Length: 75
Ligand SMILES: [Zn+2]
Image 1 (cartoon, helix red, strand yellow):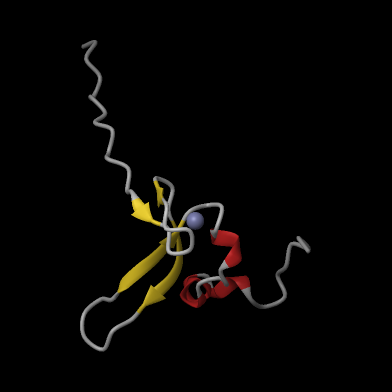
Image 2: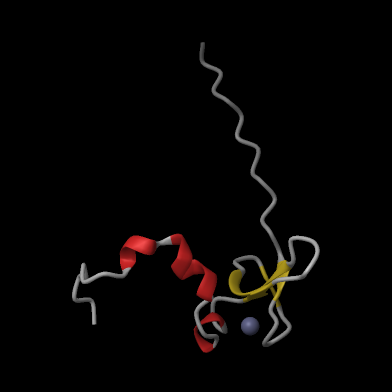
């Protein structure tokens, strides 16, 4: 058995940066748009522009253990 599972390179998600309007193949979610009905959608930015956006609030909810005095002293 010398045949390894062929790894089909998943097509990279190409998104349009909402700041510089350039297409990036490494999109960063900078905002989540919620709707009353439907799942809403995400806004993407290229890695260069991403730092210019405030962090996505919803991300904090995903890591509830991150708040509570257990800091690494990163800052
Ligand atoms: Zn950009």
